Image 1 (cartoon, rainbow, N blue to C red):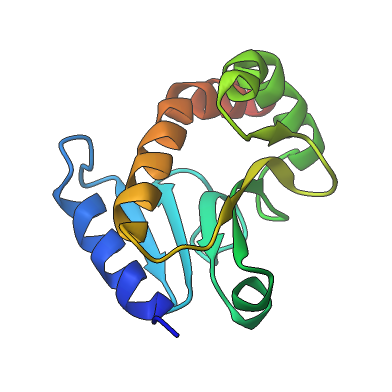
Image 2 (tube, rainbow, N blue to C red):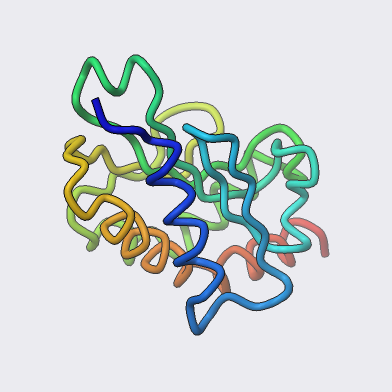
Amino acid sequence: MKNAKSVFRNLEKRLAQSSWFQDDWYIYNRGEYLQLYKDGWHNHNQGGIHFETFIEAREMKQKAFPICVHAEEDCPSQERFIQELLAIEGDRIRSWKGYKTGGSGYTVCMRTMPLNFKNLDQRLFEEFSRLRKLEAGIQEALNRVSG
């Protein structure tokens, strides 16, 4: 069985070296679980707005894993924020292959990917680079719920 921790270490390096990754981006890497978020997204305790993926025992068994955008309990006006973000970015998200919006609770959108370790860090980098395009919409939604 391949090691998700090494995949996420490689992904973290790719993200940190990418052209768009600046000082206000942060990575929280817990081995088999990774979040990417920006300063100002209320994620200092990993309970705000972030892009997330994880490959733990259940995902290994199912041979599939999620890539998500979450707005958890530390997100201001959480429910309204999610509505605003989907009003701004919903069409774009739904145009991306495999992404579903909404769902329940704090999930803004999610894609389930097959678990194949070949080039996995590169495939994850591409997905996080795609999600990064939501940055302006996330900021706009935050402005709407804060102002």
